[in-house]
Amino acid sequence: MEGRDAASQGEPETARRQESQSPFPQAPPGTWQQKLDAFVEPFVIKYLWDPRFAENCAFRGVQTFVVGGAMGFVMGIFFSSLGGPSSMGMPDFEMKGGWKKQTAEHFKHMGRSGVSMMKAFAYVGALYATTECVVEKYRGKSDLMNPLIAGCISGGLLASRAGFTATAMGCGGFAAFSVGIDWLMMENH
Image (cartoon, rainbow, N blue to C red; front, side):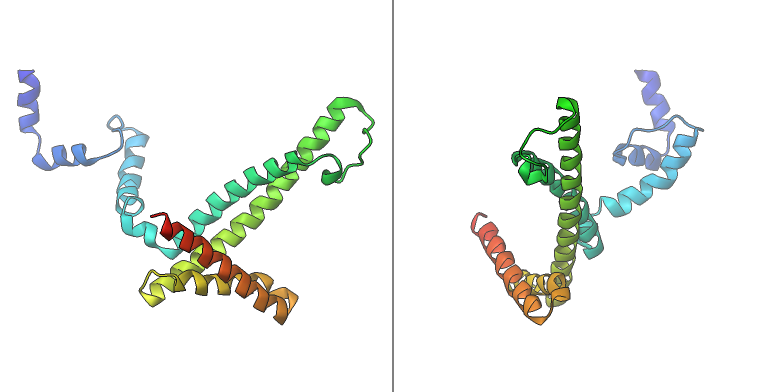
């Protein structure tokens, strides 16, 4: 114990302070992992662990894209498994080929449904989250007007290919939905 204390007294104070602040396990000296850690660790600590980084609109959009995509995939699988064969585009009568072929077809359809919903949730979530973040930064406030504006812009963009009437209805519908969800979330806090 005394030998360790004597050795630690000889170390510079900054090295001991950095070692205690590092949230990552230290790699053995002289290895490629230590060289990589020396390059990556300051970046991770400086940017990804900085609370201000999460306030970045691009980060919010990417985060919502990933999380929304994962949630959409799970919901797509869940909802496709609830329906019967006719809801999956299969005839109501028994398919030929036995249970193995039926099971394989059901899993293929579940996968296709999951991927389809994953794309939709990821796209809509990223569009709305990025738009709301930009509106909030522009206005400098966090109130119910932000989801109203962001919902209108997002809904209008999503429905813009179908014409002016659809764009107006998409704007109004998505704005009302966004304000309603935000209002409910504010009421629970």
